[in-house]
Each structure stands twice: as C-alpha cells, then as structure tokens.
Image 1 (cartoon, rainbow, N blue to C red):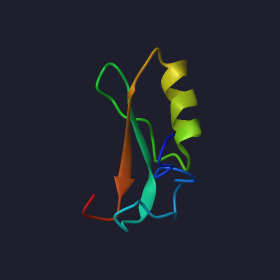
Image 2 (tube, helix red, strand yellow):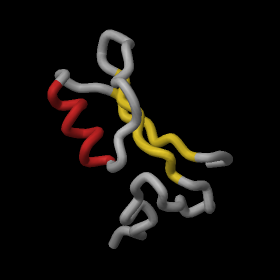
Image 3 (spheres, rainbow, N blue to C red):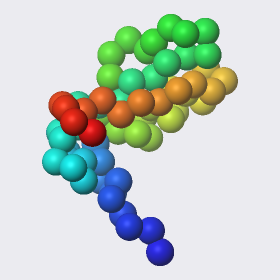
Image 4 (cartoon, rainbow, N blue to C red):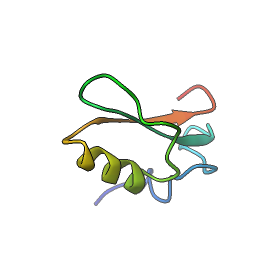
Length: 64
C-alpha cells in the first residue's frame, strides 16, 4: 500500500516536508523549457507527451 505522500500535490499545496509547491517545470528533450509552470503534475505530463518525452520537475518554495 502506498503512503500517499504526493496525494493532491498541486501548485499552492504543501509537500511532506512543509515546502509550498509553486508548480511543475517541463524541460523538453532538446534542453529548452516550457514557457511558465504548470499547476498540476497531470498538466505537465500531457505537455511532456506532446513533445515525445520530457523531464518534469516539481518546483517548491524551499528545502525539499
């Protein structure tokens, strides 16, 4: 059974360590980045799939 520590993690939410989630950054395979941050992991995954796979990184306010 999973711990659920990433449940409902979206911009404005908090991580398990208490840091605020600012959004999700997508870096395309060619090294360029999507313009702006995405609010949810699902939005970021959709963008990544449109570009044939990308790196998705959670941006937090600090620490984690």
